[in-house]
Length: 417
Ligand SMILES: [Zn+2]
Image 1 (cartoon, helix red, strand yellow):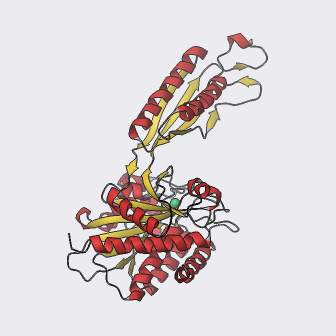
Image 2: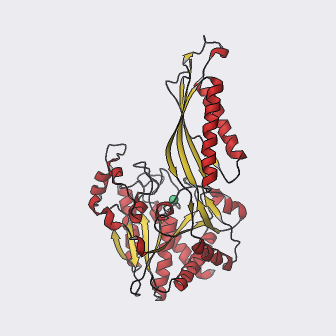
Image 3: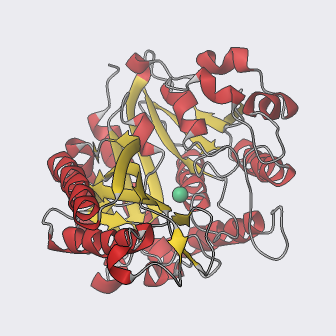
Protein backbone atom coordinates (compact mmCIF):
# COMPACT_ATOMS: atom_id res chain seq x y z
CA UNK A 1 0.00 0.00 0.00
CA UNK A 2 3.03 2.27 0.45
CA UNK A 3 3.13 2.85 -3.24
CA UNK A 4 -0.17 4.71 -2.90
CA UNK A 5 0.87 6.91 0.02
CA UNK A 6 2.49 9.61 -2.06
CA UNK A 7 -0.43 9.67 -4.48
CA UNK A 8 -2.89 9.93 -1.58
CA UNK A 9 -0.87 12.75 -0.02
CA UNK A 10 -0.83 14.56 -3.34
CA UNK A 11 -4.63 14.29 -3.62
CA UNK A 12 -5.05 15.57 -0.06
CA UNK A 13 -2.79 18.55 -0.65
CA UNK A 14 -4.83 19.48 -3.76
CA UNK A 15 -8.07 19.02 -1.78
CA UNK A 16 -6.76 21.55 0.76
CA UNK A 17 -5.57 23.91 -1.98
CA UNK A 18 -9.05 23.91 -3.56
CA UNK A 19 -10.69 24.31 -0.16
CA UNK A 20 -8.84 27.61 0.26
CA UNK A 21 -10.65 28.96 -2.81
CA UNK A 22 -13.99 30.23 -1.53
CA UNK A 23 -16.47 33.08 -1.81
CA UNK A 24 -16.47 33.24 1.97
CA UNK A 25 -13.79 33.11 4.60
CA UNK A 26 -13.82 31.15 6.81
CA UNK A 27 -15.76 28.31 5.19
CA UNK A 28 -16.01 26.90 1.70
CA UNK A 29 -18.60 28.21 -0.73
CA UNK A 30 -18.18 28.01 -4.50
CA UNK A 31 -21.36 28.67 -6.43
CA UNK A 32 -21.58 28.51 -10.21
CA UNK A 33 -19.95 31.35 -12.12
CA UNK A 34 -18.49 33.15 -9.10
CA UNK A 35 -14.87 34.33 -8.95
CA UNK A 36 -14.10 31.50 -6.52
CA UNK A 37 -15.58 28.91 -8.88
CA UNK A 38 -13.51 30.29 -11.76
CA UNK A 39 -10.33 30.28 -9.70
CA UNK A 40 -10.94 26.68 -8.61
CA UNK A 41 -11.58 25.74 -12.24
CA UNK A 42 -8.36 27.30 -13.45
CA UNK A 43 -6.40 25.50 -10.73
CA UNK A 44 -7.86 22.18 -11.81
CA UNK A 45 -7.19 22.99 -15.45
CA UNK A 46 -3.55 23.79 -14.63
CA UNK A 47 -3.16 20.42 -12.92
CA UNK A 48 -4.80 18.64 -15.85
CA UNK A 49 -2.48 20.38 -18.31
CA UNK A 50 0.58 19.56 -16.23
CA UNK A 51 -0.55 15.92 -16.26
CA UNK A 52 -0.44 15.93 -20.06
CA UNK A 53 -4.17 16.16 -20.77
CA UNK A 54 -5.59 18.32 -23.59
CA UNK A 55 -7.62 20.85 -21.67
CA UNK A 56 -10.49 23.21 -22.44
CA UNK A 57 -13.35 25.00 -20.73
CA UNK A 58 -16.68 24.27 -22.39
CA UNK A 59 -19.56 26.71 -22.89
CA UNK A 60 -21.22 26.16 -19.50
CA UNK A 61 -17.86 26.26 -17.69
CA UNK A 62 -16.98 22.58 -17.19
CA UNK A 63 -13.22 21.97 -17.05
CA UNK A 64 -12.38 19.14 -19.43
CA UNK A 65 -9.12 17.23 -19.86
CA UNK A 66 -8.70 14.60 -22.55
CA UNK A 67 -6.27 11.70 -22.53
CA UNK A 68 -6.39 10.53 -26.14
CA UNK A 69 -5.94 6.93 -27.14
CA UNK A 70 -3.83 6.05 -30.17
CA UNK A 71 -6.49 3.49 -31.18
CA UNK A 72 -8.45 4.67 -34.23
CA UNK A 73 -12.19 4.84 -33.63
CA UNK A 74 -11.79 4.43 -29.86
CA UNK A 75 -14.75 5.24 -27.60
CA UNK A 76 -14.63 7.45 -24.51
CA UNK A 77 -14.70 6.73 -20.81
CA UNK A 78 -15.63 9.78 -18.77
CA UNK A 79 -14.28 10.12 -15.24
CA UNK A 80 -15.88 13.06 -13.47
CA UNK A 81 -17.37 14.80 -10.49
CA UNK A 82 -18.08 18.42 -9.58
CA UNK A 83 -16.11 21.31 -8.06
CA UNK A 84 -18.99 23.62 -7.12
CA UNK A 85 -20.20 23.42 -3.52
CA UNK A 86 -23.15 24.16 -1.28
CA UNK A 87 -22.91 27.13 1.10
CA UNK A 88 -20.48 26.44 3.98
CA UNK A 89 -19.51 23.10 2.47
CA UNK A 90 -16.99 20.43 3.27
CA UNK A 91 -13.89 20.03 1.15
CA UNK A 92 -14.38 16.49 -0.17
CA UNK A 93 -17.84 16.42 -1.74
CA UNK A 94 -17.11 16.74 -5.46
CA UNK A 95 -13.38 17.57 -5.61
CA UNK A 96 -12.50 14.06 -4.38
CA UNK A 97 -13.82 12.49 -7.61
CA UNK A 98 -12.10 15.03 -9.84
CA UNK A 99 -8.75 14.83 -8.07
CA UNK A 100 -8.81 11.04 -7.83
CA UNK A 101 -9.56 10.91 -11.56
CA UNK A 102 -6.64 13.25 -12.17
CA UNK A 103 -4.35 11.05 -10.07
CA UNK A 104 -5.51 7.98 -11.98
CA UNK A 105 -4.64 9.55 -15.33
CA UNK A 106 -1.36 11.02 -14.06
CA UNK A 107 -0.41 7.50 -13.12
CA UNK A 108 -1.30 6.18 -16.59
CA UNK A 109 0.71 8.95 -18.29
CA UNK A 110 3.72 8.44 -15.99
CA UNK A 111 3.76 4.71 -16.62
CA UNK A 112 3.85 5.34 -20.38
CA UNK A 113 0.85 3.04 -20.82
CA UNK A 114 -1.54 3.70 -23.69
CA UNK A 115 -5.23 3.02 -23.13
CA UNK A 116 -7.41 1.46 -25.84
CA UNK A 117 -10.03 4.19 -25.25
CA UNK A 118 -10.05 7.93 -24.74
CA UNK A 119 -10.55 9.15 -21.19
CA UNK A 120 -12.14 12.52 -20.61
CA UNK A 121 -11.72 13.86 -17.09
CA UNK A 122 -14.39 16.44 -16.31
CA UNK A 123 -14.75 18.83 -13.39
CA UNK A 124 -18.44 19.74 -13.60
CA UNK A 125 -19.11 23.41 -12.88
CA UNK A 126 -22.52 23.02 -11.22
CA UNK A 127 -23.98 19.96 -9.57
CA UNK A 128 -25.38 21.39 -6.36
CA UNK A 129 -27.61 23.95 -8.08
CA UNK A 130 -27.25 26.51 -5.28
CA UNK A 131 -27.17 29.69 -7.36
CA UNK A 132 -29.93 29.00 -9.91
CA UNK A 133 -31.88 26.31 -8.01
CA UNK A 134 -31.39 23.78 -10.76
CA UNK A 135 -29.08 20.81 -10.39
CA UNK A 136 -26.68 19.09 -12.81
CA UNK A 137 -26.09 22.09 -15.09
CA UNK A 138 -22.62 20.82 -16.08
CA UNK A 139 -23.39 17.14 -16.57
CA UNK A 140 -26.61 17.85 -18.47
CA UNK A 141 -24.57 19.72 -21.09
CA UNK A 142 -22.23 16.74 -21.47
CA UNK A 143 -25.19 14.33 -21.64
CA UNK A 144 -26.92 16.53 -24.25
CA UNK A 145 -30.00 17.07 -22.06
CA UNK A 146 -29.53 20.71 -21.07
CA UNK A 147 -32.86 22.54 -21.20
CA UNK A 148 -32.44 25.98 -22.77
CA UNK A 149 -35.36 27.45 -20.75
CA UNK A 150 -33.10 27.25 -17.70
CA UNK A 151 -30.97 30.05 -19.20
CA UNK A 152 -33.66 32.54 -18.12
CA UNK A 153 -33.53 31.51 -14.44
CA UNK A 154 -32.29 34.29 -12.21
CA UNK A 155 -30.15 34.24 -9.08
CA UNK A 156 -30.90 36.30 -5.96
CA UNK A 157 -29.34 39.39 -7.55
CA UNK A 158 -31.50 39.11 -10.66
CA UNK A 159 -28.66 37.83 -12.90
CA UNK A 160 -29.86 35.17 -15.33
CA UNK A 161 -27.95 31.96 -15.99
CA UNK A 162 -27.46 33.08 -19.62
CA UNK A 163 -25.87 36.32 -18.40
CA UNK A 164 -23.70 34.47 -15.88
CA UNK A 165 -22.52 32.16 -18.67
CA UNK A 166 -21.58 35.11 -20.88
CA UNK A 167 -19.71 36.68 -18.01
CA UNK A 168 -17.44 33.66 -17.67
CA UNK A 169 -16.84 33.57 -21.42
CA UNK A 170 -19.38 30.93 -22.44
CA UNK A 171 -21.87 31.19 -25.27
CA UNK A 172 -25.26 29.43 -24.97
CA UNK A 173 -25.10 28.84 -28.74
CA UNK A 174 -22.21 26.40 -28.15
CA UNK A 175 -23.96 24.25 -25.54
CA UNK A 176 -25.10 21.54 -27.94
CA UNK A 177 -21.60 21.12 -29.38
CA UNK A 178 -20.27 20.30 -25.92
CA UNK A 179 -22.35 17.14 -25.55
CA UNK A 180 -20.51 13.86 -26.08
CA UNK A 181 -22.32 12.07 -28.94
CA UNK A 182 -24.23 8.98 -27.71
CA UNK A 183 -22.23 6.59 -29.94
CA UNK A 184 -18.93 7.85 -28.50
CA UNK A 185 -19.66 6.83 -24.91
CA UNK A 186 -18.16 3.68 -23.38
CA UNK A 187 -19.03 4.45 -19.80
CA UNK A 188 -18.94 6.88 -16.91
CA UNK A 189 -17.09 6.47 -13.62
CA UNK A 190 -17.55 8.78 -10.62
CA UNK A 191 -15.83 8.58 -7.26
CA UNK A 192 -17.61 10.41 -4.43
CA UNK A 193 -17.74 10.44 -0.65
CA UNK A 194 -20.64 8.34 0.62
CA UNK A 195 -22.43 11.22 2.42
CA UNK A 196 -23.99 8.63 4.68
CA UNK A 197 -22.82 6.36 7.53
CA UNK A 198 -23.12 2.86 6.00
CA UNK A 199 -19.43 2.37 5.09
CA UNK A 200 -18.36 4.08 8.33
CA UNK A 201 -20.55 1.80 10.44
CA UNK A 202 -19.52 -1.27 8.43
CA UNK A 203 -15.81 -0.37 8.72
CA UNK A 204 -15.24 -0.67 4.95
CA UNK A 205 -13.30 2.03 3.06
CA UNK A 206 -15.04 1.88 -0.33
CA UNK A 207 -18.18 0.45 -1.89
CA UNK A 208 -19.89 0.20 -5.28
CA UNK A 209 -23.15 2.08 -5.77
CA UNK A 210 -25.96 -0.21 -6.88
CA UNK A 211 -28.51 2.50 -7.52
CA UNK A 212 -29.22 6.17 -7.02
CA UNK A 213 -32.59 6.76 -5.39
CA UNK A 214 -35.43 8.26 -7.33
CA UNK A 215 -37.12 11.25 -5.81
CA UNK A 216 -40.51 12.91 -5.62
CA UNK A 217 -40.74 16.48 -4.39
CA UNK A 218 -44.18 17.75 -3.55
CA UNK A 219 -45.93 20.60 -1.83
CA UNK A 220 -48.85 19.92 0.49
CA UNK A 221 -51.25 22.67 1.45
CA UNK A 222 -53.58 22.43 4.47
CA UNK A 223 -56.31 25.06 4.54
CA UNK A 224 -58.45 25.55 7.62
CA UNK A 225 -59.93 28.65 9.19
CA UNK A 226 -57.87 31.35 10.85
CA UNK A 227 -59.36 32.67 14.07
CA UNK A 228 -58.71 34.27 17.44
CA UNK A 229 -56.53 32.12 19.68
CA UNK A 230 -58.55 33.15 22.71
CA UNK A 231 -62.13 33.13 21.56
CA UNK A 232 -62.68 30.08 19.32
CA UNK A 233 -63.42 26.97 21.44
CA UNK A 234 -61.16 23.96 20.84
CA UNK A 235 -63.94 21.80 19.38
CA UNK A 236 -64.86 24.47 16.84
CA UNK A 237 -61.46 24.95 15.25
CA UNK A 238 -60.06 24.00 11.85
CA UNK A 239 -56.40 24.45 12.74
CA UNK A 240 -54.25 23.93 9.62
CA UNK A 241 -51.03 23.58 11.62
CA UNK A 242 -52.43 20.79 13.80
CA UNK A 243 -53.33 18.95 10.58
CA UNK A 244 -49.84 19.56 9.19
CA UNK A 245 -48.22 18.44 12.45
CA UNK A 246 -50.19 15.21 12.36
CA UNK A 247 -49.16 14.74 8.73
CA UNK A 248 -45.42 15.20 9.52
CA UNK A 249 -45.53 12.38 12.07
CA UNK A 250 -47.77 10.16 9.96
CA UNK A 251 -45.39 10.51 7.01
CA UNK A 252 -42.47 9.57 9.25
CA UNK A 253 -44.43 6.50 10.39
CA UNK A 254 -45.26 5.59 6.80
CA UNK A 255 -41.60 5.64 5.75
CA UNK A 256 -40.46 3.78 8.87
CA UNK A 257 -42.99 1.01 8.25
CA UNK A 258 -42.23 0.76 4.55
CA UNK A 259 -39.95 -1.89 3.10
CA UNK A 260 -37.64 -1.11 0.21
CA UNK A 261 -35.68 1.75 1.71
CA UNK A 262 -38.28 4.49 1.48
CA UNK A 263 -37.24 7.76 3.12
CA UNK A 264 -39.61 10.69 3.54
CA UNK A 265 -38.97 14.16 4.89
CA UNK A 266 -40.92 17.33 5.57
CA UNK A 267 -38.14 19.89 5.47
CA UNK A 268 -40.16 23.10 5.30
CA UNK A 269 -43.33 24.27 7.01
CA UNK A 270 -44.71 27.65 6.18
CA UNK A 271 -47.56 29.11 8.22
CA UNK A 272 -49.40 31.81 6.27
CA UNK A 273 -49.81 35.04 8.29
CA UNK A 274 -48.36 33.38 11.37
CA UNK A 275 -48.96 35.11 14.71
CA UNK A 276 -48.91 33.85 18.26
CA UNK A 277 -52.54 34.84 18.88
CA UNK A 278 -53.99 33.49 15.61
CA UNK A 279 -55.16 29.94 14.91
CA UNK A 280 -53.21 28.96 11.78
CA UNK A 281 -55.49 29.08 8.74
CA UNK A 282 -53.08 27.79 6.12
CA UNK A 283 -49.87 25.75 6.18
CA UNK A 284 -47.68 24.77 3.23
CA UNK A 285 -45.36 21.77 3.74
CA UNK A 286 -42.58 20.49 1.51
CA UNK A 287 -42.40 16.74 1.01
CA UNK A 288 -39.33 14.82 -0.20
CA UNK A 289 -39.77 11.08 -0.78
CA UNK A 290 -36.96 8.84 -2.08
CA UNK A 291 -36.33 5.19 -2.88
CA UNK A 292 -34.12 3.23 -5.26
CA UNK A 293 -37.17 1.10 -6.12
CA UNK A 294 -39.56 2.79 -8.53
CA UNK A 295 -42.56 0.80 -7.30
CA UNK A 296 -41.83 1.60 -3.65
CA UNK A 297 -41.48 5.25 -4.57
CA UNK A 298 -44.77 5.41 -6.41
CA UNK A 299 -46.56 3.46 -3.65
CA UNK A 300 -45.05 5.90 -1.16
CA UNK A 301 -46.50 8.85 -3.05
CA UNK A 302 -49.93 7.19 -3.25
CA UNK A 303 -49.91 6.52 0.51
CA UNK A 304 -48.77 10.06 1.18
CA UNK A 305 -51.77 11.32 -0.82
CA UNK A 306 -53.99 9.01 1.24
CA UNK A 307 -52.62 10.43 4.50
CA UNK A 308 -53.20 13.99 3.40
CA UNK A 309 -56.76 13.25 2.32
CA UNK A 310 -57.60 11.31 5.50
CA UNK A 311 -56.21 13.98 7.86
CA UNK A 312 -57.93 16.72 5.88
CA UNK A 313 -61.31 14.96 5.96
CA UNK A 314 -61.13 14.14 9.67
CA UNK A 315 -60.09 17.67 10.67
CA UNK A 316 -62.33 19.59 8.28
CA UNK A 317 -59.40 20.99 6.29
CA UNK A 318 -59.15 21.55 2.56
CA UNK A 319 -56.01 19.80 1.29
CA UNK A 320 -53.96 19.93 -1.87
CA UNK A 321 -50.90 17.90 -2.92
CA UNK A 322 -48.90 19.21 -5.88
CA UNK A 323 -46.00 17.16 -7.23
CA UNK A 324 -43.21 19.64 -7.97
CA UNK A 325 -40.53 17.36 -9.38
CA UNK A 326 -39.96 13.65 -9.96
CA UNK A 327 -36.83 11.79 -10.98
CA UNK A 328 -36.82 8.02 -11.42
CA UNK A 329 -34.19 5.82 -9.72
CA UNK A 330 -30.97 5.15 -11.64
CA UNK A 331 -29.63 1.61 -11.67
CA UNK A 332 -25.84 1.56 -12.08
CA UNK A 333 -24.33 -0.59 -14.83
CA UNK A 334 -24.16 -4.24 -13.75
CA UNK A 335 -21.07 -5.05 -15.84
CA UNK A 336 -19.00 -2.12 -14.60
CA UNK A 337 -20.16 -2.81 -11.04
CA UNK A 338 -19.06 -6.42 -11.33
CA UNK A 339 -15.56 -5.25 -12.29
CA UNK A 340 -15.57 -2.68 -9.49
CA UNK A 341 -16.68 -5.35 -7.02
CA UNK A 342 -13.87 -7.59 -8.23
CA UNK A 343 -11.35 -4.78 -7.68
CA UNK A 344 -12.66 -4.15 -4.17
CA UNK A 345 -12.48 -7.88 -3.37
CA UNK A 346 -8.94 -8.10 -4.78
CA UNK A 347 -7.89 -5.23 -2.50
CA UNK A 348 -9.08 -7.34 0.43
CA UNK A 349 -12.37 -5.66 1.30
CA UNK A 350 -15.90 -6.91 1.59
CA UNK A 351 -18.08 -5.79 -1.33
CA UNK A 352 -20.98 -3.89 0.19
CA UNK A 353 -23.32 -2.50 -2.45
CA UNK A 354 -24.78 0.87 -1.53
CA UNK A 355 -27.80 2.87 -2.51
CA UNK A 356 -27.23 6.57 -2.92
CA UNK A 357 -29.96 8.64 -1.33
CA UNK A 358 -28.37 11.77 -2.77
CA UNK A 359 -28.41 12.69 -6.44
CA UNK A 360 -25.17 12.80 -8.44
CA UNK A 361 -23.95 13.82 -11.89
CA UNK A 362 -24.27 10.14 -12.82
CA UNK A 363 -28.06 10.68 -12.91
CA UNK A 364 -28.25 12.75 -16.14
CA UNK A 365 -25.32 10.83 -17.67
CA UNK A 366 -27.18 7.52 -17.15
CA UNK A 367 -29.51 8.50 -20.00
CA UNK A 368 -26.64 8.22 -22.50
CA UNK A 369 -24.03 5.90 -20.97
CA UNK A 370 -23.51 3.00 -18.55
CA UNK A 371 -22.69 4.60 -15.20
CA UNK A 372 -20.64 3.32 -12.30
CA UNK A 373 -19.95 5.02 -8.97
CA UNK A 374 -17.61 4.22 -6.12
CA UNK A 375 -18.30 5.67 -2.70
CA UNK A 376 -15.46 6.39 -0.29
CA UNK A 377 -16.12 6.26 3.45
CA UNK A 378 -16.43 9.65 5.08
CA UNK A 379 -16.09 10.31 8.80
CA UNK A 380 -19.39 9.45 10.55
CA UNK A 381 -21.17 9.93 7.22
CA UNK A 382 -21.00 13.72 7.63
CA UNK A 383 -21.28 15.79 4.45
CA UNK A 384 -22.33 19.29 3.32
CA UNK A 385 -20.58 20.44 6.48
CA UNK A 386 -17.09 21.75 7.30
CA UNK A 387 -16.45 18.58 9.35
CA UNK A 388 -16.59 16.42 6.21
CA UNK A 389 -13.46 14.22 6.27
CA UNK A 390 -11.83 11.27 4.50
CA UNK A 391 -9.00 9.29 6.12
CA UNK A 392 -5.69 8.92 4.29
CA UNK A 393 -5.94 5.15 4.64
CA UNK A 394 -9.28 5.12 2.82
CA UNK A 395 -7.87 7.25 0.03
CA UNK A 396 -5.10 4.73 -0.47
CA UNK A 397 -7.64 1.93 -0.66
CA UNK A 398 -9.70 3.94 -3.16
CA UNK A 399 -6.65 4.57 -5.37
CA UNK A 400 -5.78 0.86 -5.44
CA UNK A 401 -9.34 -0.07 -6.38
CA UNK A 402 -9.67 2.65 -9.04
CA UNK A 403 -6.35 1.63 -10.64
CA UNK A 404 -7.56 -1.95 -10.79
CA UNK A 405 -10.91 -0.96 -12.31
CA UNK A 406 -9.22 1.11 -15.02
CA UNK A 407 -6.93 -1.80 -15.76
CA UNK A 408 -9.86 -4.21 -16.05
CA UNK A 409 -11.74 -1.80 -18.32
CA UNK A 410 -8.71 -1.52 -20.57
CA UNK A 411 -8.81 -5.31 -20.91
CA UNK A 412 -12.48 -5.53 -21.88
CA UNK A 413 -12.66 -2.38 -23.98
CA UNK A 414 -9.59 -3.30 -25.99
CA UNK A 415 -11.21 -2.94 -29.35
CA UNK A 416 -12.96 0.00 -30.90
CA UNK A 417 -16.77 -0.12 -30.85
ZN1 LIG B 1 -21.39 15.89 -4.63
